[in-house]
Length: 458
Image (cartoon, rainbow, N blue to C red; front, side, top):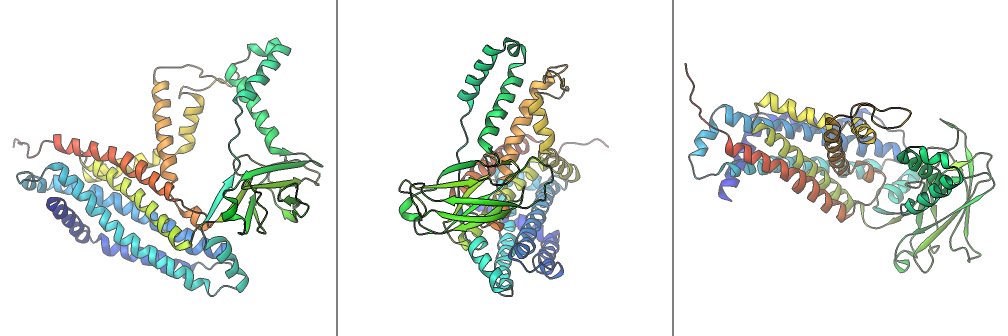
């Protein structure tokens, strides 16, 4: 521990010596303080949060992320290039201790800067919120300065339904059996999924959502969040929503008629006492418009309820950002274990750019290769031995990118959504211990096997 502490302190001194602390401090001050003063909000709660919380936290994460890669690649590469590690190597300090000590030092550096900037944003939020109109302040208190949990419909199990429908159709029309099974399955699945999502004109759609413990939530007001689409692309028309909420057997169900806009989430509050004895909320929608509505299964209907304070939620959000910085520092140190400083910085930046190009990766997985797809059959046109390898790598990268993206708390905080402790634990496990640990083990192994002070001929 003494060796790790000494290496961590030396890493912090290196950050100061690079003048990175001063430059990054100035940039963070400009981001946290100057940006909200230069860019004025529109006076609404949403505009206020967009400027003061969403933009600032995003820029803070980006600045600290770039600084983390810079110092991680620079500090270890410099020790190797300037032969500092040769002096340490003859002392009773293992090379893995050097690597881990530098990681601890970088994370201590990040912790101080993230804590100070995050605390500044928190106090600015409450200080600037006092200047908003009273109506917008109430919106902040009820929708954003809270921690609301979410209840949605479970993902539908369509495998059995799809199999039965395919059997029925192929029996009635034997020619369908000659189609590609994967293509036929996809078509039938999409049709089955559409039947669960559409509401035709003049029809009623009912959703029964498991919210939670009725004793705990019975006296709390709820928010229903809806999102729908119509058959017209870029539809800007305003529609009427007719809602009945509460137990169907209760004659005093809550009825609300509101105005809805397609492709835009709409949120409205419903009074307390509408959850039944099983902890379920029943929502009926009457489509008295002339167009068919489509409510996505994933986020078409959602029930939000309060479950915590904004301060605790904000702290968990900062810890999620901190976990992401832990992975970046591990990646930078791993690259610096075998590359020079500019090449290590280029390598890690390129790796992040490729990993976050989710569209390309998703296309590789969907097409099951990189050799091109026949538009008629939906299969790879000229498969090669590279295709299975590319699909495997793309699937792993997509999973990793999905986990890392889930560690960003900006959208959850700006919507007043709860960041559960389980999400924080999962992020720490997958991002820091999992992916960061793999980078760490690889970097330590390379550094351990690397030959130092090689003889040179003149």
